[in-house]
Image (cartoon, rainbow, N blue to C red; front, top):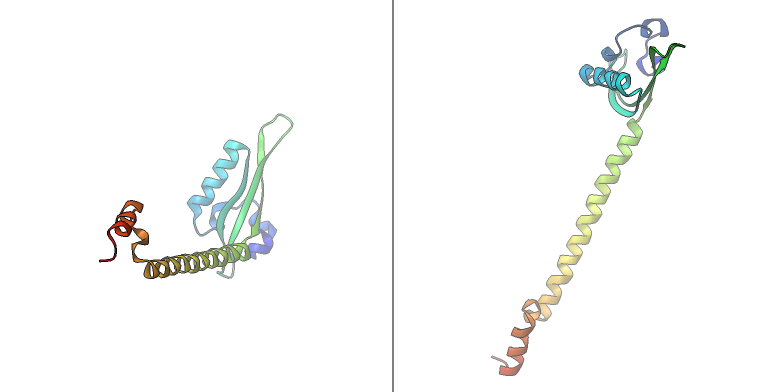
Length: 136
């Protein structure tokens, strides 16, 4: 968190965790979930840095306990996932583009087959009747 926020360790320790995120309520919810379940993994948040920048992070946390099994605190780590999110977005865009190309080619091939054989899309019994009646 020191490196990601730009704040020094002394300021971070004991300060309200939620204040370092763009959505303090979601960050507080992550802390509550950690206390309830004992652990949180891959909880996505947007971190605010001291300089005003924002960074998508994956937050992982676990409670630590004293010898009497009472919760003494939470150990948390956040890692920058901005590059990962950017790649995921690019992949989704490429998949949508490729899907569009495939659908276009399929429609085009289907239209081409229909143009060569206009009664192709009609039920088989209609084709059979036309063949028996002869050309119109």
